[in-house]
Image (spheres, rainbow, N blue to C red):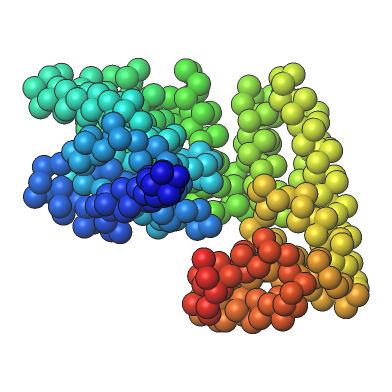
Length: 418
């Protein structure tokens, strides 16, 4: 009797993975969309990221729920690496599970960032109905209001290009300055949005120039907002030095403007993203020359302290001979948002410290290999060589580090098990 119970328990334990394996996942979103065109079923994409579970059922056990099984049959299912679909990034990309619901034409209908559930499927259905009604309004209703509503819907649902098209259509349907100004600002934001891979800088600049034409004397405050937004656009497209100059020009001309604090904040951000802490500190030291409200003043005081510390850490990291401890201290201080190129530069300097050894040396080699792993063939070859040095330490590697090294080696195509 005990043996029968044990056998039944074993079968039950194995049923979960077997059940999960029957879900008809496609490994290509394009293939799922093609199938959707044939079947009429919408697409549910389960996203994963490197170092997370590719087996999405293990990433989200809620997919195994018996009550969801029939409802999942109403979708074409695909799993995809989020890094290969940057257009769907939003918020904390490391927070999983994550799902995107699509129509057959590829339009994002719903973005779900929790475990899958019946409520999520209901939310998708509601969102699809809302989109259908908005599209019907565009076809049969007031062109301005309908296009504006549809554009805003797309802006909230990761459909940047469709949102931009909608905003331009709404603008073409009105001659009102009062209506146009906020839409032009929204258009500039959807065309160049932080973290979005799709950018239309030309349209964003056109929208900002049009704002300046409609409000040349800043009578309703949009011309100055457009100037601020212009600095943000320059930052987002990666021209940090130009953004610093734009901000400096604004502050020189309008030091007591209500937006001076916001402009100064963007200038400091651009300087720190360049890693120019000395210049950032010099600008912050003169902040009393500008009009700042109390919250901005308080925030900039904290920023001044952080920038001063980072300036000192960078001076130490740049000193000769190279010190691994100094380089790692600098990188730890900017870990959440390192300046462009800092990680590779100072990891390389850290490895020049001839006295470095043990865990620190191993960690710096691994992290540099990780940074190089997404580069060109030469960078990936260097990453593999660095991992060879890490692996050479053999049994000294803790089990967790062995797993991380194995995963990275597999990504580089040099062996190792997941």
